[in-house]
Length: 101
Image 1 (cartoon, one colour):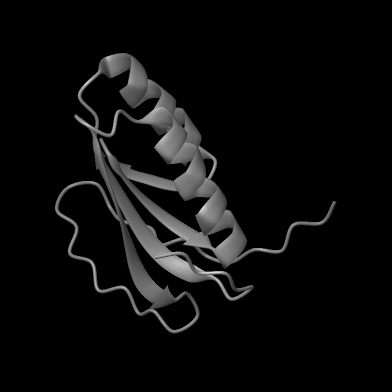
Image 2 (cartoon, rainbow, N blue to C red):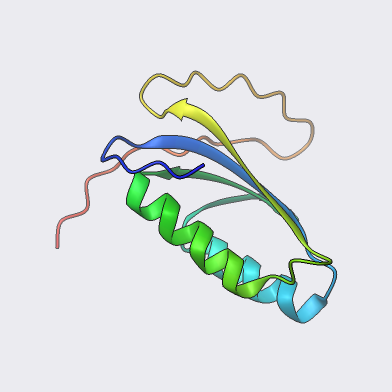
């Protein structure tokens, strides 16, 4: 499903990549889109354009026969009340911040 909107949605992206070299490429790519939560899990806050860009980049990196990426849309970021139970290391949700260039 492709969303094209300026409204940010919250996403959880999880992946199972069979090759360590491809896994590293996917990991490095995902660091540009969200916050790393666990080994192959990221929390992202993206508008429709960035979400489409991320999905396109991931499709170019993975092997469609052996790898698996899921993108869970949690809904509009402003409306999402994350209820996360975190055992061990604490969970910090992504907060919207203005970036001045």
